[in-house]
Image (cartoon, rainbow, N blue to C red; front, side, top):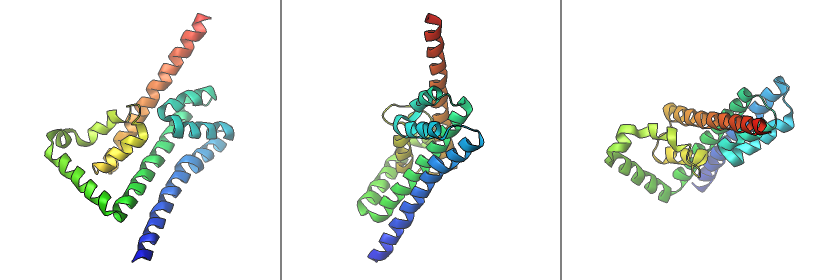
Length: 182
């Protein structure tokens, strides 16, 4: 029994690692090579997304990466992180009685409150913008409330792209103000 559990954990962990590798390295690297974007700039942007989340747009603009490619990289990394968090959390739920009970309790709470029933997954759209919660916290919230379908992922990515676009426009606005000042 214990070997089967370890095998299950290894499979789920390797799946999460593969998702992260594909979304954070392989896909961005392939597009960087095709679009003649310096590899160091692409890795700088990906690293910034992991650390700074939506604010990484500023790093991408500073590296003089095309805004469309910045949004593509931001989306690729975000999707990989969301899917990897789901896999890792599922692994914990499958192998921990405590986490399974906690998940069932969260499901009961969500069923009792009309706000969850009325708005449900739509709450993910603005949650991803909240500093301190952002991408990682939003994916955990979605997993906790068992919002793991395409709609939930699409709403998180839409909120993510809106946040990144706002940061991008704000960055351009600040740059034009500074340039206009001098």
